[in-house]
Structure formats: structure tokens, C-alpha cells
Length: 405
Figure 1 (spheres, rainbow, N blue to C red):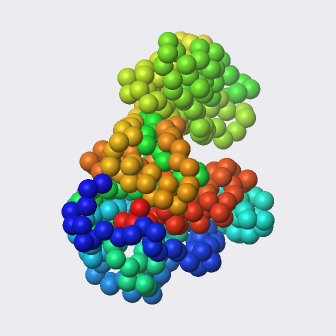
Figure 2 (cartoon, helix red, strand yellow; figure 1 turned 180 degrees about the vertical axis):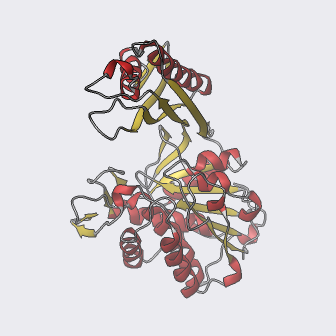
């Protein structure tokens, strides 16, 4: 990157290093906080208290009302810290998301042999993405406490990432201060740079059948469960469920939720199905969505009552996030790579098959590279945090925040 003033150049050999013990304590405390999607208020309170204790002015900390515009009404909006630069450079943005998946609620972080896991075997750890929250928070605290030279900075902690990237979708670009370089922390190793991610489409299907006594007159009913079962079997049989490979195109689909029925002696008249489709190719993703819809229509046509009545489907779908891919010579990619390599860490460029807040940042005109911070086996009870990788992530983040890459 070209520096605007030679006098502002900082010797990377003398770059600041974060306090590893303080960062580890921070992430342990953050992972123990309950805070699923839509319930991030306690996490935000922790972050704000830590920033204020480190010397951040109250006027530099902002919260938006993103939770009022998301499908899930939450108790917290996106949290932003903006700092004016002491170096005359382009503004940089560091981001992570505050929410965890439901399996991580109740996490009891325990450190053993360089790995953190939840002591409760029934819960995940929540390193996705409290490790990201702690990584950028640690960078901000080091800068504030030690008054380190830095370019103009924006730190952003997003809400509701796990249920469709809704916080990043709803962020107002002006609130971020027009950053020119953006870095997002989520899953994986510290020097894994994710430069692209798939697009995802979310589907809600309500199946309307016809109730009848399951013992006395089952033939008079139309089973919504039978319709759902036939449709899913159709998708599976024809290769449109799970990993999808068709004529050189790749994608995925998943029926993740089925809700319906109240008793075995009643032909079920209502079922709710929630599904998704993903692909890096927008046209192929639309094809997957069409195949899902057609499968449910065919199933409705097949299931009939004794007097010829059929069920109906009520379909709702929305694009959660569009696919994106940065070029390897994108400034944010080059700067992130330089930061990792300046610390001696080998860099891997990757494309993700899941969504990232970076998907929506790209749509907002803010290209962002995503870096990992040591999370392993996310969204499972076997989730762990690799402490060495987490501490590497903290070093990379501080170099990026101070422009000492």
C-alpha cells in the first residue's frame, strides 16, 4: 500500500505486541456470556465496559437500531467504536460478530493443554465468534491504553450473524466512517485469509393439508407430513438435497426444520418446513431453489383425499446474502497477508462455503478479507479454541490496527 506521508511510516520490527494473558482472560470471559442471535446485549455491555475502562470516550462508541429492522426482534444493535487517526492514512475497519448458535448457550470455558473447550459436554464453546470479538477488542484496548500511533479506525461488533448476517446487512455505511481497508474475524486459523464466500437463500414452506380422524376416516384427510416426506424424498432421490453436483455446477441444500402435528390419531393438516440453498453461482442457486419448490408442488399433487382434495403450499424465500470473491491483489487482502507474513505466519487464501459478515460488507461497497482466530469444530459440542492460533490472531489484528504490517 502506498503511504500518504513518508513521515508516518512505522518500523514493523518495532511493532507493538498485545498482552497474551489479558487477551486469553478476555476471550474466556466472553465465551461464558450467554448471547445467542437477538440476545447480544450482555456481550455488548462487556465490550463497552472494557472500552470505557481502557479510555475510550463515550462519544466514540455508537449503537445502531439494526435489531428493529431484522426478522428476529433483538435486544441489541450493531456496536461501533470510531477513533480518529494519529497517522494520516486511510481509515481501517476491524469487525467480528457477537452472537453464537443456540448450542453454545451455557458454555463453561475450560483451558487444558493449549485448547479451550466447554466443561459442560452438552454445550458448544462459543469461540465462534467470541474469539473474534476478543481479538478486535484486544487491539482496541492496546491502542487506547498505550496510546499507540494508528490510522483512523473503526471497530464493529455485528449482531445476528448466525441467522443470516442480519446485523451486517442492516448496518449503515456512514456509521462506519467510510473505511478503505476492512478486516473481519471469524473461523479458522489465524493466517487463513478468506477472500470469498458462497451466497445463501433461506426458504420457509407452510404445507396446508386436511385434518381427519386417523383411525375412523384417514382417507378423508390430506397429510401435510406425507407431502413433506414425499417432497424431501424427491429432492434426495434426484440429487437436489445435500451436496449438489449438476453439469459442472456445485451447490448445497438442506431441509433443516420440520414442525407439525399434535397427535397420532389426527391426519396432520399443517407442517412448517424451513430449508436453505447455497451456491457460489447465483444462477445455479436459483435453479436449486426452483427444484425445491417444484418438488413440493409435485408432492402436493400426489397426496389426495378420497374425494380428490389436495393440499397447498405457501412459499416464502429470501436471499440472505450474495456470493462474493475478492481478487488476490485487492488492497485489504495484500495488507492482511503482509501483516501475517511480517510475523512469520504462512498465509492460506480460502473460499468459504458458508456466509460471512464480509458478504454484506462487500454488497455495501466495503471489500473485507476475513481472518480466523483459532476456532475449531464450530457449531458442535466438540468446539475448541486453539490458544496459540487465537494469540496469533491478536498479534495480526494489532498490526493491522496500527498499520505496522
